[in-house]
Amino acid sequence: MLIYLLFIIISLLVFVGIVALYGNVRKKYRKLFRKIMAVCFVFFLIGSINLLFFQVTKNFEEETDITSLEENVDALNDNIALKNSSIEELEDLDQVLSDEEIRDYDNEYKSLSSDLKANTNLLTSLENEYNDLNKEYQTLYDETSYLIDGVVTYHQYPDYPNGCESVALYILLKYYHVDVTVEEIVEALPKGSSPHRINGVLYAGNPLREFVGDPRLYTGYGVFEEPIIEVANQFKEGIINYTGHSLDDVLALVRDGHPVQVWASINMEDTDVCVSWIDEDTGENVDWICDLHSLVVIGYDYQSVITSDSYTGEIETYDRDQFEKMYNLFGKRALYYEE
Figure 1 (spheres, one colour):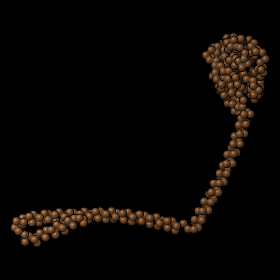
Figure 2: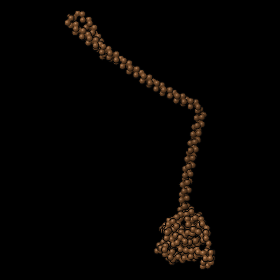
Figure 3: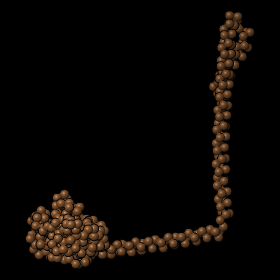
Figure 4: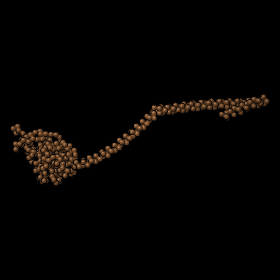
């Protein structure tokens, strides 16, 4: 802005000086003086216009700065109002909670902290008690469970659909490394006739003496322990008839490492007498309980009995109470070897 001002002053002084001298100069120089006067006038106008523009621009910038300052002031006022509002809220809160109430809250907090500590100690005590009980349970479980290793499995289907007794004996013999096949056992097994009618009366063999029917046929029925003992002694002497003993007695044998062949029902399902016939040799009545099954007990725990089951061809676990129920129903029939 100072440059423009000097520029105007100099142009104006030169112009005034030329005007003052104009009347005293010769005519031939007056034309030159007029040109110089015109130039000075032009410079004067240029300087004035620039000075005016600079001033207008400066005023605009000052107005902009003022607007910005006003906005900043408004923002500061808003912030101050917000702070004042927060202060008022704090003052109101201080007025709402009296010293006595604050003490009550403090006492309540201390009480809750004490309860939390007591509950934490109780929880720790319960966790320790649980761990002790779990150890005791594991000890009892180990004492009431056992499993014989090395017992084979064999699936009676499709070759021996009713040959569970023969397959159970096979599993028992294989545990003692006897070189025998299921077919050899089936061939050695005494067999009687399947149920058939004569003059309207149903006759058949007796499972106490022989297999009723043929274990290789779906029309076969089954056999009890005496004929199985006869066959077993042909391949390994010394099999023991343990019929009549409780399931607990059987499991005690298992605990001593002896697999035990027993009679029960298929899948331990409830069953009952479903057919009766006359023994064609003795004339005695025979009551047949359906779903007869024979399998080998190889282990147990406090609630289960573990078996090598030819019906599925797998190691199967059954509920101990239900197993005992079916074992008792079929006469507590059991066989085992001492070695």
